[in-house]
Amino acid sequence: MAIPLILFGGWKPLQRRYPDIPLEVERTFSGSSMYFGHSLFGFYRQCVDVSVSAQGLRLSIGGVSSRFFLPAMVIDWCDIQQCTRTRMGFVGEALKFRLRGWPSPIYVGRFLWKYGDVCENLIGRWRSAQDEPRNP
Image (tube, rainbow, N blue to C red; front, side, top):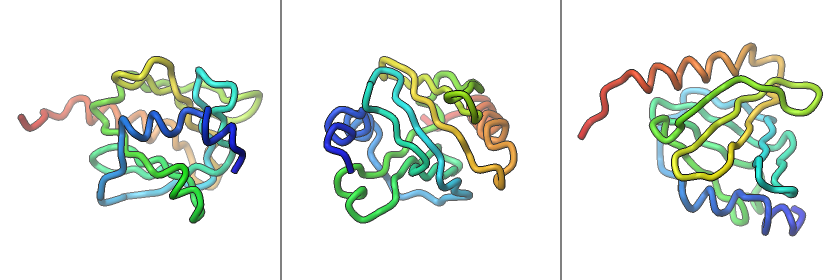
């Protein structure tokens, strides 16, 4: 792990806002990429696991040292204010997320082709979660 990535990449502040919690994962898309729109160092290339659950998304980076330096986070569907399809770099589809209380967008994408249309799947999940009534 590069020190600038750990210190300035943006993962730690976002993870403090959305800490990891136990949840039942339905599907995991390994080898994805993630980019923090505000940071020069905030690009995690092909090392992010995106797990989908009824509660939201878990973002994690594999490896023992990553779990200590960059622990997993869970973003509840209701905390995602906007979820749109976009491009990540010159190749690869991605999702642009606007999160409640987070100043800049985050981009998650470049999903492996073997998973099919992950972007459309996740947008559909997000939309259906927005329509569900919340427990008080």
